[in-house]
Length: 322
Image 1 (cartoon, rainbow, N blue to C red):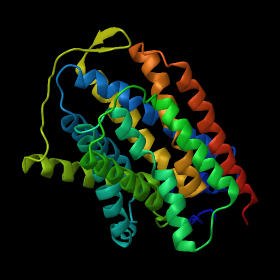
Image 2: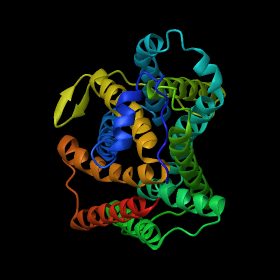
Image 3: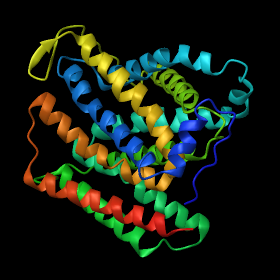
């Protein structure tokens, strides 16, 4: 997949150009870092949910707080360049509606009807959906390496989620889970294809503002339950203030992760970036072990190796492509 060209007018252009020239060193490294901080969200969110926060409340404050944090640097970056926002308003709206709000909303709807592992597996079918979409749009069958990498990654993801025992499979829940996967597909496509002159910081801020507004509206309409509990939480076996977990969820798992995720998608393209995002599951397990004391099983470690193998196959195909 061709690398995205970045306009020299962008404030972030020098670093993005550098990443595009050295995707193995820069783009892949940024993508892995983004997955690592994204993976922290489960541990921070669980600390809040365990004391009575509703998922909708946690994710709405997550997006709204991150948007506020990014607002001032966004204003500074966009001085004299607000025409870029007007030019790219459709991309920002799509990113916020589908890549942020819909992805989160559909996922939380899915976990009301399905086991969390099943819902997460459905959401992370996004890389496979991207391959299928590119196959249909370009009318060209993917290379054997990409097909093999997709299959290997899906098998690895199933192993990592360790879907053993009886699971409740609700057809409506499956549809919600697939909806979350479609939202994730939009996230990667918009991140990779948006006008290169628009800094990743601005796209992230705009998308988070749209996402938080949509979640707030859904709550006002009674479609989402908002429950808060401003009491101490347990994190890494220590009891700490609730705002520590919320702050980590906002700063690390949202502000840093979204900005770096957009940078990685621009440097690598939507397909490769989406496959590398599968490592988020591995990082989530690692952080859960470090912060929550949850030890991964042997089958999960094997699954992690399969995911890495799938990513390497897709990367090998990308290097062979013109």
